[in-house]
Image 1 (cartoon, rainbow, N blue to C red):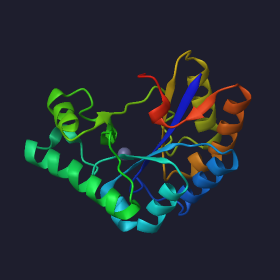
Image 2 (cartoon, rainbow, N blue to C red):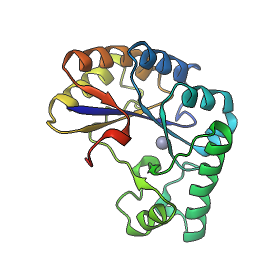
Image 3 (cartoon, rainbow, N blue to C red):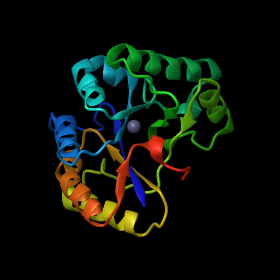
Image 4 (cartoon, protein in one colour):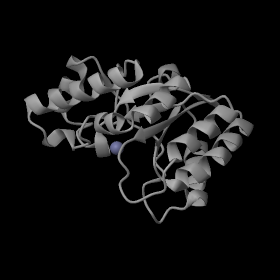
Length: 198
Ligand SMILES: [Zn+2]
């Protein structure tokens, strides 16, 4: 079974410690795991060195919009501008092309035909998820995130996408054990490129 760990990398949703992205990179590097990071355009502009470190570590990049607004609330022009602006920033900052991977902020619009049409027109496919430990939730400590990810993955029998974020402290705490347990379970950890459609 294959599992793609994905990290939405954006301005933190609440105050958090700095350096979480580097701790994630370290945990992934220790086990030689390739993950997928969905970068918010504005975040990448504000944190170009960090964005470059993620790309340089060999992870797959995706587009997580520019403003991190609910995409179904944007008019047609704004929707396209937002996706293109993020893409331009990610390319200029990291040298990597985020296409064809796009993830809607908050998952808002991922079932909206107008949003999906704009995403498709610009060369993207939307990437949802199968397991969500709500690592952004401040009531979820590292142990809880770890438990929810492992339970979620073990309940599935097919390729699985796990939704995580690049900034919560709990995610940095949980990741080393999530990786070692999944590897011990015989799971193959891959980037989204290597998954069958899930
Ligand atoms: Zn997000």
